[in-house]
Length: 321
Image (cartoon, rainbow, N blue to C red; front, side, top):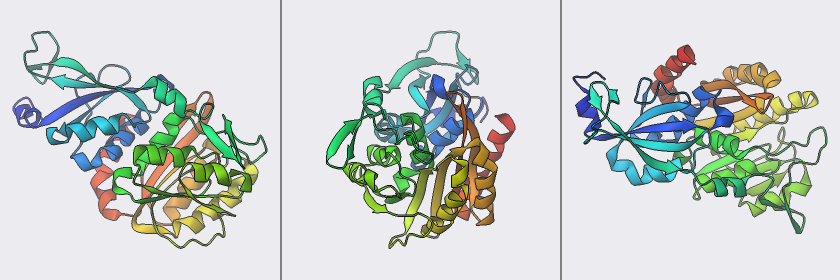
């Protein structure tokens, strides 16, 4: 896109400037990829040098104007960004310019902070047996995990292209943050969960999941899935069972299926190697510092066509961030 051709784009597209949450400023590559995959059905174009791209914490995308209503709905459900502005070029009358055109900044979507707080694991209800409890975050055992923050749950789901998914599996479901976010992002998604701890069954079904109690490494399923979305157990003692569980459940991915995983930094290379060994194409892999805890996110696909389509963006992000 040049000064000579920019009008061809801005006449039919909106430019959206997206502000990354303060908690995830260091995960810019993941934030970009989350937006790209969430907005994929809308002919989205990432603008590495767009308006406000030089401002810390902002990234810019171009989206066809035909999708404005759908766009607004999706932006309310993004994880790593929480404020969004429209860039307009009519009657600018100021000194802000982009490719020779003056522009204005118009507030578009500001996510509801009260809703975010209500969805946080320390506030939302979770059923333990017949009792609803607030703030369930794991049992404190070696394998019991604290519940994922809202932004990570949303991000992992969005990386799996939820608007092109009808059935998602979380094979290490824990306290259900991913199941909860799946239904929030796309209420039409069917969610299946697995966890070895029977005490979690009521809570996961409360979140609308079809739930299996069992060992993910050897459980037998009767469906194929558009995506696997999960945070794996971080304990060193769990590594072999995590890999066995992923190996088993990846057999149930559809031919164009995706996988979106959060793991500990220690597990990052192990799981990345496994994903490459089973022939998946990685389109996002990055370290995420979560309040002093280094974790990593990996997203990959079985779909060679999609992998080829997204590879120029992947390569560009790897050279920039």
